[in-house]
Length: 476
Image 1 (cartoon, rainbow, N blue to C red):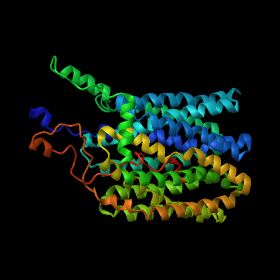
Image 2 (image 1 turned 90 degrees about the vertical axis):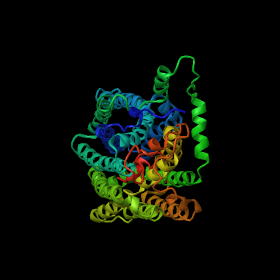
Image 3 (image 1 turned 90 degrees about the horizontal axis):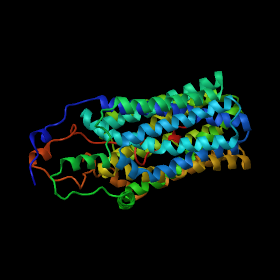
Image 4 (image 1 turned 60 degrees about the vertical axis):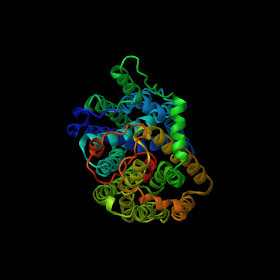
């Protein structure tokens, strides 16, 4: 085994450009998605008057999202997250832009709306995953701890959850839901341009590009390893995830809460706003209250989360952000009380995904992040497509108030019972270990092995990372 050259051992110059680029791409695309999360259900409610049809649209968007995301982990690892990110955002921009365009000329039947929504959902899954996977690499370039970089990713997501509902509610109130859907299309296009032009050319490379580079550098006649095929890569991710009891326990609990959150966001909140007379402006206010407080929680998490006991903070956050939202809407409380409850819940939610990300990045090797992230996210989000359908059907059978009460009770029971599982003690065991080791990397000399690629502080996770709480979690 040869020792590394001086150029290989020397750390690369620090650059904030990759981190700023990734966060900017996440910010614009997520903001557009949050605007659409209000505009699309309101458009369906206004045109059909049916809670069931609103749930169907939510299902048609999220089912392809979950399914395609589960299968594209090897593709992201193989082609590289950068290529996947800008190409999928481009397709999303075209499909999302066709909705207001065709509606404006009277050529948007309901079946075609479902096709376009399904297309956006299908390509948004791998696009979101690709941006998540680039966060650790961007942290390395910036030489900042993963805890801080992924905390900033969490703040970015929370800011999108704040600005998006505010913009969406205002646009819908002033110009109608099609304006919000137009903003969504423009945001996807901006996200593609940011990734394509703002990120350094060598960032976000996949297995194929690294293998090609290896081929050029290899000595003639020397044996070199061929890149693994799709199904072999898929099996590697599945095998790794199956051997992680803590991650599997997290997935099961998050799958249930994401199902409840999806029904809450896509059906129950719009119906509450309609029946209470608050309209889309009330949806925007609750989302803003949630988002502003969540930004504060995420900022605190980025600064001090690595010093706090993960298990206690994690379940305390769920206690604040879960059942109280359902109950305050069921009690028909004044809007001021509703906003206060959403604000407290948002603050608690700001700590959740950074902790989940810390656990993920400590346990999953970098070369498996795409595959494990795709499988973990898809399993954790598997209930989201059903959330809107079940909520719409339940409201049609029993009314809004009973569904809110049952949903809040199920949320509390799920998080409370899950906290009793013994696997949760593992949350702090690998704390501060940094990114999980890649077993394929050769062992180098002791000097180079001691040279860190980033600041030596405890690692953490991204907000929309593998095994993250779903986008429906935001409540409003």
